Length: 212
Image (cartoon, rainbow, N blue to C red; front, side, top):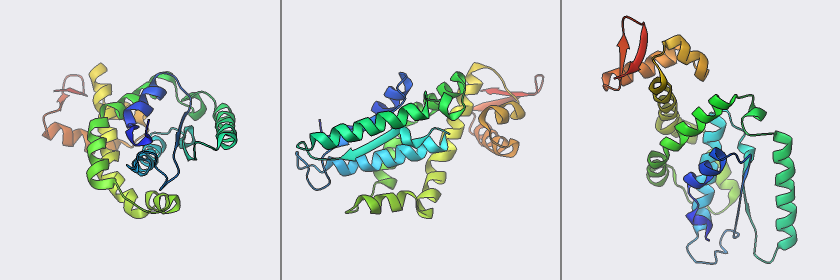
């Protein structure tokens, strides 16, 4: 299968099903077997996914993309052995990052729910085409990308987590702040925006926010 067909949903499904690491191996850039250059598309997706993982507190080293030819069996074995060693050193997903099981599930679920939106954003606003891996890595670590990430994705991830929490029970601003590790002022801004959109309401009797 061409790596161009790899979707964020495939990666998230693996992590959500208990995998501690995900490895993707593809053709070398400009050596595409299908003449679709799909490996450029997966490079965009993986670098974006690693950025989102880092934002959520998950170690991005748990996701690795390597390019090699079908004749490089020894290199493939070496790379996979190295990745397995690295993942073992990182420990179980979530535990290695100091998260409890519920916190991990919340982060993965909030990411999964946004996949259709992120696909669209990646395709229309974030997909770039360079000649080298180094150029891609430079873009995804640039201030320009950080600005776009905050504008297009970071706030949506926070709101996704808040909505999932409120689906379970009404919560105060302080309670949400402690669970997500965000400041009360940040949570208030998200809740006020959601309240204006009719997504959440404030329960005066309980002094907590709930889904509208």
